[in-house]
Image (cartoon, one colour):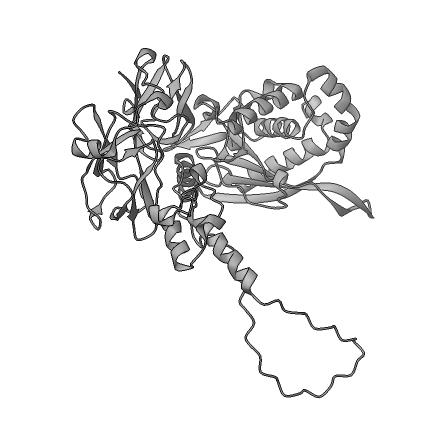
Length: 517
């Protein structure tokens, strides 16, 4: 037996949240297979199998907080794998009920986390009894809370050896409520979750919460298509069926013929008695849904709020004519791609423009440490990247020494790692200044928040054609609003405005950067 434990998570990271398990108890795995993903406040860490074997038990559930060294699962060697499900004997239920735990080990079925701020629930109807054969993840019982109904799945395939709580008992997350004996498990047997909610052929299986909706509305369970595991009918499926019945029974109303605009308005007649119009059912689905914040989202929220609480954030705005850069990209794009294998984008110009401006205004590239100011003589540019998990800011190191092609390649590399959840802690530490491009999402104007402890962040926005007055004439130009948020404790207004003007000049005349003007 080998324990799968939480590995080292990086410098200063001591805790993680269990994410999605890629395996279940009983699965065979190969060396280096991904077992589970752990979410920290900085990066996602994959836990891989160190050898071939079989997952015998999963001890940390999705959403659990675990520390370094904590046990996540147990794994046996490949030679210890249990017999395949199709050859396992099906035990006699009566014999199992007489001596359910006479041999083999028993695994605890515990109450899972039931949602944020939910600390107690009430045991509902047991879906199994002592002696029943169960499969992995088969629902054992439904627990009612003040917010939701939570099903407790079987932690292993086996036989129900003991039920430790009764219907109506109050339980808390982590309580052991049943024991499942692994001995003599009939893994290929799948018992109905709710006997009372099965159809005439026993094929349609409804979850407990769905069974109540079906019973209350007198629905035909055989006519409902289940979207749950193994075709089970969920509460959402039942609600959709209710909505369909309501829509089918609602009388069709014929719209009145439109009256010509010029037609005279007749005298109003006495209203005729009529039945009230049927109400249109609202869209099926929960009115509210409580979802636990990921550790990354919690960290984003914490850091942004800390930045607002500690720094004196002020924002100054300007706008840049993007004609020169757009013309350069159009002229040289084909040759650039042929030589470097990447497209010439806008971000490389912005990174270069900011590096040049930071050299002129070093306060924007500095940070406060207690009563000291630390001036940075290197230019590591954080580039904000939006992912499904939240906003992350990987760092392009020594950007002032890189070519446009080098910057584009590095941004592409870091962006792919961010979207794949492969960023490391080192990828996101040490930036001296940040760029955030809200324009890719259509933002026309916004105020970016500092990425502490940095003293400046540049917000880029959508390029939009606008009429501009140039030499007494109105000319349509592709314009972009720029926003610099800065820490007024260290950066004065004059320095902030000058910095943003330098960025504007570098963008509107990129040749300035070639001559270091």
